[in-house]
Length: 143
Ligand code: ADP
Ligand code: MG
Image (cartoon, rainbow, N blue to C red; front, top):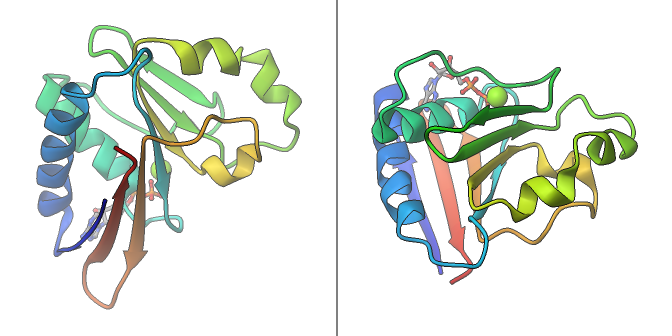
């Protein structure tokens, strides 16, 4: 299923995150859902993650884990990845990527394309396109 929408500003992106959180919360699979977040730097991937976490009740700061690759939110059941900086796929082995992907957590992944074929296929793919004013978001749900 593919849907497309216009997101006019940051607040609308946060609201979209709350919608996604509801959808992902009702996901039933053996493991938690794998979500690819794609779009240029500054597109709003991290803002969307912030919207998801806020709606689950997390009030702290949410930043791209560009240097650590992973920020776990254990209480919220969310793993936030950012693979922008990856140079060798071995780095993914070091963090134990397969085990992390099998966890019963929601996996939100920025720059999944940098991980090559080391990731499972996504349950959901969000593509954010920067437009003159605002963003166009294409959402593909595999189920
Ligand atoms: P990314 O993680 O994709 O690099 P960020 O979420 O960190 O992007 O940054 C997006 C920036 O763009 C933020 O500063 C945010 O305020 C701004 N912004 C402007 N319009 C929008 C919009 N419609 N949706 C999301 N972010 C927006
Ligand atoms: Mg980011």
